[in-house]
Length: 334
Image (cartoon, rainbow, N blue to C red; front, side, top):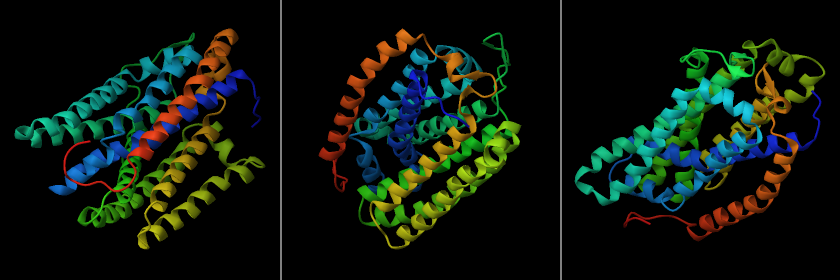
């Protein structure tokens, strides 16, 4: 697999970075929402306070990823969205319900049980939809004449359900390990137990997706198992095994930051594996990044904006996390 580094490739990496940043930053607070029903009383307040200062800012990266795809790869945007409209709508509604529940849970104590259900339901729907969108893209989209030619439910398959479940488990792992960093007392003990269980579920589903993906397309199989490329691709599962060993070891030793960072490493390796399977296609076997790219002048114009805006986003995000560093309590809302 050769990589031609040009402006279109640079934009592909920018979009990939934006999506990964979203998974990293919004993944753990969606994961906390998924785990929310297993917490009780003050544990729920600590879980909420662990993400209260940053949850809405984390979704900036979703806007960057979606907006960047529309601007830099308009043809891909025009094909992928019609192919996954029900999932996109479900994801956005989930995020809306989750955001509303987050605010009203503190301001409407009389109906807190309802808002807790909405918070968990919105988080679960958003995470599951994101995983299914990934599966729908990987399994292939029916394209004819540069347009989507499939049906309303083509995205629904055992494989997309598997990827949906995998993302839910992975976000739960991120959420549990983030709580290890942020909470204390009984909630901390609970977070360690949940992290171990979520890690097992994540790794089982990650292995299942990894085994199923090469069976979808012959090209995927060639990328992973043909020589000499296999000498490179085999390093990914090897690194996953190493990260897994250290993840369980740090959980056993009750480390603070290491479990979260190692969970992020698993997601990074999963993203690399996704890139190995798909590149240079943005719609597998139909549309490459060069087919889908906007005109060069548009890419240059947008790149100038990204060079200015992205460091600002990174700076204010880092500042927010720095200001709200340390453990949280249960005494109110940030």
